[in-house]
Length: 114
Length: 111
Image (cartoon, rainbow over all chains, first blue to last red):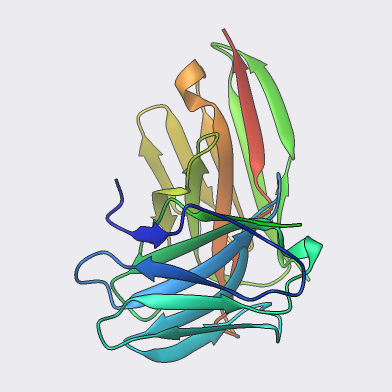
């Protein structure tokens, strides 16, 4: 158990819809990262927040957005969903601002868009 | 596009054989991290390398960071079935503060 929690575990929705994925980091970690992993693919970095502020941006689509709240939990919002958005979405947390710190990954949310 | 490439994509070995995965970047990296993801699981941090030419060992695993800080390797000696999973490298690009995960090497170990 990494100490990072993600909800829901599974999500099935239709094209065009909007969903919100939630992540609670490990106690004491200020950074939250979001990743997308398509079937049998690598991890695509989406975005990082540190202590409520956006820190780094990867290949995140404009239809996707995220935020980190004062209690440090984070939400990833995916809108106008397409079939290709079906993937495993991981959240990770770490202590510092830079990704030079060990990242602890949550169990992931599996999104299926039909 | 992908800045950190990993080879091979898949590797099937007999238990007891050695295994190596290679990670190559087109740009200089500030650091490199290695993660392991078991089937159906989430990535778990293994190690971080920071210095040019650095070599670190964890039991049967040996990690190397290239002299130019553009490549890295993970070598497993005498694989066991517990080594099954996908091994990812992840690097922080030196100049642009961008973090990239490699495409991963999926290791299967036959008993």
